[in-house]
Length: 78
Image (cartoon, rainbow, N blue to C red):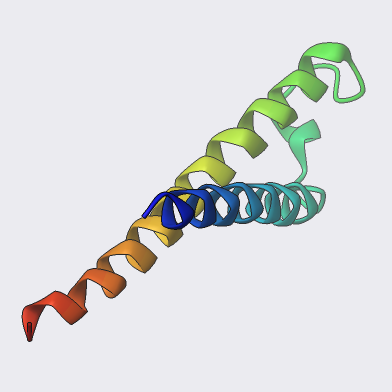
């Protein structure tokens, strides 16, 4: 039973890192210079990192919840 928890933890880590990288990659095409005063400043870079983490957390949470819910569907017929 504990092996399942380890597998779920590993899957969650991989999914979080994957969506963090995808979100970072996708946000590179977004023009933050339209919304911040100094686009190359430290504050703009920190904002980019925070937005990346927030979006990646939302997307990976949705994906993991969906995966967990779809795995629970097998208990309907038992």
